[in-house]
Length: 449
Ligand code: PLP
Image (cartoon, rainbow, N blue to C red; front, side):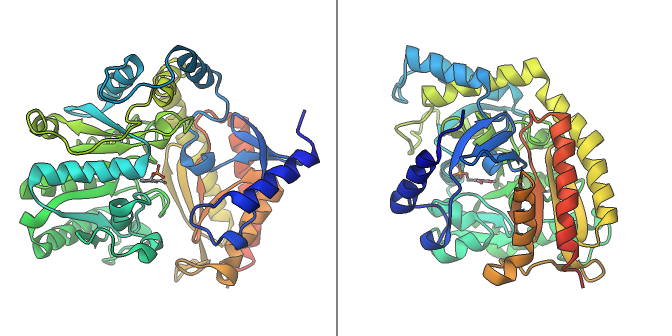
């Protein structure tokens, strides 16, 4: 039974009067009241169902109301709802151990945070303490969070209004094969030129001023940019050569999104620090963290780490994290993500690309894909301009509206549609969602010149 229309009116009224929303001009938004969620679907108060192809903010990896995660929180709440971080706690310790077991190389300690931005803040702080250097290099076309240093690291327009907050950041270009910054025409060339560029930035910024290089293992919101073969190994080698800490931001791609516990495992690369959040407990309670290599952890054996949070390793957030490991192992989540990505999503998206003139490229891994839309496949002019808003963004808005009317909740960013459903989505739902995208792209085609 769904709540009645009166309930919806109250939700809307409270929200409009009192809730201040992220990244928005408050009078120009109209947040949809949500009545319920189950698995890969959620419902509004009118009874409209939406198949969630964005996993909320690419965090709902195990779907809505997963019984194991709900039970883990309920049981923990009944046992010990909170305990401060300087105590030892069973679920906090178990989750840290289980993360260490699946993290690559010698990364075997975890500092827990409340989310992704603060995980990146603290990773940078660790790198600065260990190296005695201050500067951090990060990519254009990246998102690392909304807090002071994290927004400075961010290489997208969300940074612009927040400058300067951490002045010790310099940006570089990462690989992007479809729009190569160096005119590369093969993945090998892209890797070679992107690494040569990064080395130049290191040298020109002054290698001995650089504490860390931070990058998303696969760039998320800014395009599902899967690095070409050899690129991450090359970053690792440059970091070693110049004594720089390599931080992998896996807030979006960690915990199964691309069919591995950590995306770096897919590439066989071992960073010094990995940051995570979102999928660690599917967002059932706020949680993030930094996985720390022995070398970096050892620095803080006798020197105090100057950082902390009241809710570091909160039991109500860690309990569904432990349950996440149990569900992944019992239900073979990593295997199913790899299988669905290779067997269902990849082939279907390539079919869609061949059929629609508006599709410039499809790319991705596991259950994490982008459909990049263009006005003209020859020139690759994006369907809407970079950072388009208002009327300029209308073509993408029309595609999104078409998806929603058909019952699919899409992830839309600039001129891209991303496919990032919950990892527990059924094959039938996945196929149906891809069919709805196929239909909605007819709207995009109408803008092709
Ligand atoms: N890093 C990446 C790659 C992200 O995608 C995000 C959030 O979307 C963040 C960091 C920030 O995480 P949070 O919003 O939990 O602070």
